[in-house]
Each structure stands twice: as structure tokens, then as C-alpha cells.
Image 1 (spheres, rainbow, N blue to C red):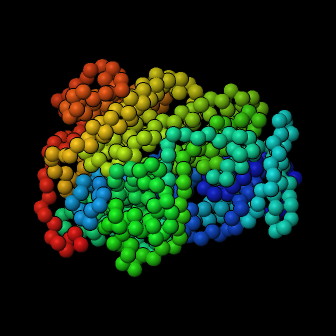
Image 2: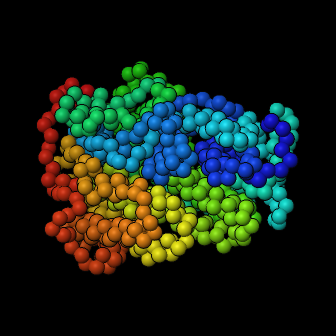
Image 3: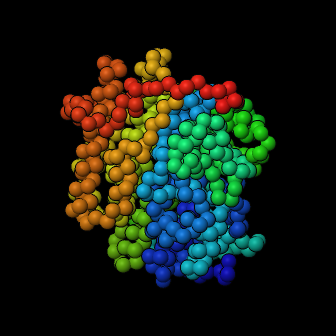
Length: 556
């Protein structure tokens, strides 16, 4: 600490991704703010094997690149992501002969793979350059919240000395330590029982090395599968592989706690045994000696909620100190972006002398609704993850839900614009109702699919890039629109969701005539598939062409 501060405008407890990005955003919004960030870890932190959570998606990527103005760093020091990619490769050596879902070329809206150590080191330096008092290597020993206009007080120990940081605003960005959550009893459990084990290895892992089939290797242009967030999927689990710009690769196993107990993978040796059984091609790659492990960690019951995040008494919670749903679609940085945006709005209103109680309550209601809708994509759904017919359809639905409303609203900077939100109330309610019916319908469909498949699925390539409407949803995220045009666009997106829902329901009933649709049929009004379906027959497994048998060496 350069000097024990007497009183600051904002004290941020936690100088990781959430806390440092908030400090940068606040200083960009109001350069006159006095901000102190208190971080336990000494900087610079290690690159590579530091923190998990390396993949970004559209909202989080836009936040870092444009809201925080860090596009140059992302382009020069991180890895441009080649989208999500899914291989339904349970128990298979020949990954090139399983169903693959992904894009063949980059979609227009960018995202990046983040080396968290490199990025947080950069954020710390950048925050200091902006005038933030970033105190690393410091431990919070106590927090005293004020109930009136008096300052909050944070007791901080650094280098054996105690300091008292007084602040009008206090933000908890302490990650899973959840200092305010624990102090105020705000923790909330949810029904998503999931665990994870992960580690980093030296060198990059390229799925193209898993095949000698030139046609398969060149499905992508450029053939850069290694830059994707690759998901190797099976019943009750998925395995991620994510490249880091420091030259390491991140590996993680995420699983339903009842289908794959964490005790089966809570050491590196056990995790490798688990991979040999479930994803043997990746296991074989890791056993070559070219990719020694750098670390290993596991986490039981990683998903949780929080009953309050923003207070009229000038405190707030952001990042994993508040809520965490699931890493499957990499929403962690999205929730940081949204929470930090609401905190900046509240702080600006407070600085202007306005009462913030009503806005704090409304922003919290909106944020928690985003969390609950995201959580619904995962809760009870892991049993579907190995279904090569159904899971690609779920992925398309989940993306469409995300790109239709929340993402364009964020890109348009209207996430806190009450007049626009009021005009979209019915559209949001309609979309949420569709998703609330779709998720259990998909579960029911997957349960009915337990019978042996009758059509081959080997070698399917489901290219999201070639779906024109899907590509357009992504392309138009960054379109500058006035309020009227934005409202019209989002309402049209909900109509697209209805069309997709009707098509999925019709296909489901074509396979299982007595399927319980959980009210989805009533929502789409008995609509049938139109003359120009959104998804071609190959997406439903109706037009599968079995690939030629792989040479023995290609499967080895």
C-alpha cells in the first residue's frame, strides 16, 4: 500500500478478474473516483497454471474488448477463440468418426481464450496506470458495514501491519471466499449437483492430430480446431480442452455428481484413469510425454446462488463471490460484465445524489433472472450430454436463447435502460416461458432415447456456420440500433425462437408420439414445421451418411 488511505470512494475486496475489471470500468466512467483494490495474491501471478475460467463468450468478450477498451491486448496477447466445438466421443479412439458440432469458419462476433494469469497481471498494471490503488499481497481481516452515510471499514493486513480502509462503497469480488456472502448469510444452494477436476499441461493439444483423414482435418478453414473450446461429451459429463497463450493447455472434467462421483477423479492419477475409460484419445495424447501436467485441482458442488447482490446501503457483490451456474457455455465473464455494469450504474446514481434503493432492487431482480435462466440450461440436463442426436439440438436452442435477447441487449448498452426493458417485458416473458418448457421437454426426449439407435451417426459434421439464420444472429449482435429498432429486432428474435421451438417439438413427436411436451405445444400454438425448416434433416439424424471405415493407424 503506497500509503494508508484515509477514505476512498470505492473499496473492492478481491483483485482477480471481477474486481480489477470493475476498477478499470469505474475509472473509465469517472476518472475522479478514488478506488482501492485489495488482493490477497502477490502480483505478478504465474501464467498458465493459475486460475480456471479461461474461455469467453460474446457478452464477456465484448465487455473486455469494448467496455473496458482492451481489444489490443486481447488480439496481441491472448488467443482468438474458434467458437465452441463438441465431439460425441464417449469411449472412442477414433474421434474423427463421431458426431462433431461446431463452426467451419470464424463467426463475425469475436471471443477469446484467456490465460488468466497473463490477463490479470495486465489488468493490475492497467488499473494502476489509470490511478487505481491496487494493493496486492494483502489480507482482509475484517469488514464493518455502515448502515447510514458513515463509511464502510475494511481491516487489511499487509507486511505484518494493519490498516483501516474507509470507503463509501464496498464491493466484494473475493471469489469463492464470498466474504460478504458469509458475513451476511446470503448463500443459496441450488439443485444443480455438479463437480469438476482440472489441470493444465505444457504445450497445445490439436484435435487435428487425432486423424490422418485430410478431408476431416480440413473441415475447418483455417484448420484450427485447437483454438476452439473443445467439448468431449458423454453421458453425464463433458471434458474441456482450452489453449492458453502462454503455451499451456487447460484440461477439465465436469460431471453430474450422481453419475460420475468426484471421488473417481479427485487426483491426477484417478482423472487419467477416468479419461482412459471415457475419452481414450485424449488420454493417449496426454500420455505421450509431450504434455507434462503443471497443476491439478478439483471442486465439489461448484454451482450456487446468492440471495442479495446489490444494496441501497452502498455495498455490492460481483463475480464468483455472488453466483455461479456452470462452465459449460463459459458464462462466468458474462455475469461479471452484467454485475459490474449494474454496480457502475448504482454508483453513478449515488454520486449524483439520487436514492438508489429502487434501482438496486430492480437490477438485482434482473440479474438473478438471468442467472436462473442460465442455470436452467444445466440443471438435470447432464444425462443428455452423450446423446449425439439430441444434444446438438439442445446446443442450437441454448445458443439461440442467448443470442436472441440477453446478448443483443447487452451489446446495445440497454441492460439498465428501464424504458426499453419495459417495452420488452412481454418478449422476455415469452422467451423465458419457451425455455422453461423446452428444457424439461428435452430431458423427456433424451430419456426416451435410451433405446438403441437405428441409424448410424458416424462421421456427422453439423456446421453451425452454414445455418444462415444462426450466423445472422451472431453477426447482428453489434449492430448500432436506436430504441425502436432494438425493440423490433428482439421481438423478431423471439418469433424466431417460437419457430425453432415448434420445429424441435414436431421432430420430437415424430420420434415419440406420446411425448410429454411440458406445455411447449400450447406455447407455440400447434404450429407445424414450415416449408423451409431452420435445421436440415442431418441435424435430426435423418440423413446420416456413415463415413468410410478408418484405417487402423488413424484410430490408433
